[in-house]
Amino acid sequence: MNKLLLETALHKLVDIAYKGYFDELIELLKIDSIFCDSLIQIENLINWVRRDSFDQEFLFSLHQDELVTLIKVFTKLDGAVDKFTFGTNTPVPCLLYRLSDLNCEKSKYDEIVDWIFKNRTNKSIFPFGWDAFDDAKSLNEYITLAELKKLKNEEYRIKNNIRGVENRLKDLDKVTSDLIDAIKRRDVGSFDKLIHKGADIYHILEDGQSIYDKIRLVKTEKSKDWTRLHKPLVESLYICDCDNNGLSIIFGDFEPTKEIFNFDCVSLSARYDHGFGFSQLYKFVNDKESEEIKRLCDQANANQKTILLPKQVSSKWRVLLTPVIKTNDERDILVYKNLMADIFNKCHELHSKALYMSQYSLMMSYKNHQIKGIIEAFQELKKAKFNGVEKVYFDVDMRFRQHFYSEFRKNLVP
Image (tube, rainbow, N blue to C red; front, side):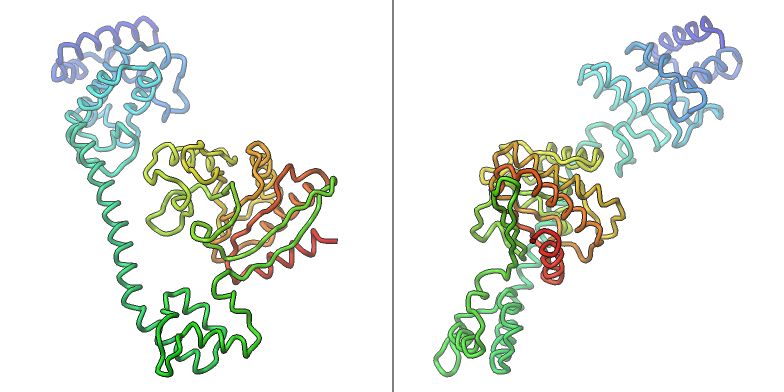
């Protein structure tokens, strides 16, 4: 296509858009085939969906007024002229991204976005990417709908929390009754589970003794340590590096925000879907709605790298985000080895002495190569240095704790 024809078409479009003659533009395209072909060629050059014809150099050559003109033209023509009916292949997002790259003034950018909402007929034109508010008819309405959704999500989360607390309150009497039955059966294995469910251990029985006293008596008779009611059952091992510096590796089912542990660094999976109970993140940061934290979570997963959150997110500990580890993850052992090594490097930079690893606390199952990768990282650290780290707490579900411990002991302890 002749470069002069494209420039002429662009100048004509700028004038038409400035005057708002979009109906006249539609009629002009029907009778001026050369002008119509020029506009089709421009769309092919600036739309990255057209991989065979997209020309980044041409797109980058357009100044702000030309970009705004093309945004308005392709929004207005979409659906009004057959040759410019794009559906999901609309070029408008490409032009908007480029406009934002040019540091367009926010007020001007918002004005363009508002214009799109008010003039689009193609609901696939999303100024902010794909989202649920395709019926918004103005920028203000979009912002209001987005705020409403955020509030409804928060309302849903709060209602869920309230419902959970109410259910636990309803269950307390039954759980306490079940614990009394377990004492009568001398079923020591059920004691901890029922206490963790909220049974009232200070309830007074018919003989005047409390449930607490009864449990202690039964456990003493069966040579069980009463402290299991207050501390999580843990397994630990001790290894040394090349300079004979020691490192304790502790496996348990912890409640780190309630229990007293001397850790100063927390390693968490980079996910923020706390409304569904999967995220540990919101136990350890102050701002539960931080967009910056969400952005860093997405960045950690996209780049598959460990990211240190800013110091101000918590007054108690430094927080490391690691890429999400899924139950059915089939990635190579080296991925987990490098991930563990990366966490230790970050701890060294922070002068951390005790690290809490939460990644395995909520997993329903796991792959053996995930454990092997972590063990290989510790084998390398033993040959080098622990760099000041003295303790590592692995939060592991009680179903898998013994296997974790035995694999670590077999491969790390002489």
